[in-house]
Amino acid sequence: MPLVETKYFGTLPYREESIFDFPQGLPAFEDQRAFVPIELPEHAPLIFLQSLAEKELCFLSLPILVADLDYQLSVCREDLETLDLATDRQPILGGDVLVLTLISLHDGFSATANLMAPIVVNLKNRRSVQAIRQDSVYSHQHPIGPRQREEAC
Image 1 (cartoon, rainbow, N blue to C red):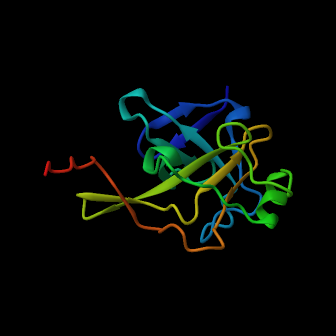
Image 2: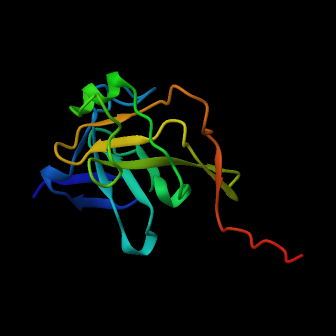
């Protein structure tokens, strides 16, 4: 079983079939094309996306529906082609694709989710893209954290 060197978790084994293949890389990281998802029970539902080439590069992510239960996926034709998916319809979350949102930490106290450009992974071939939406329905800084209870009237 191959091993991946990580900054935060040391050396970990992974399965070749678990690799997320980004044919175009990620925006600002175009040379990074292979990532391994790391899921640790003590950090669930977080998923760490560890670069196979750079041990220092690891993105923090969540399944998109954890950040927004009502999220509506919209993937452009070019990204659907890159993913090797049908271009005449949107893919089905959990059926055709895994969709993750990248998390940003601010000042160590608050976190936001990038709902504007989710990571979309074809579940059949593991081809992946960061699918930047063509609309402005969602923000790249969607607040996440414990939900506040509404005060009773």
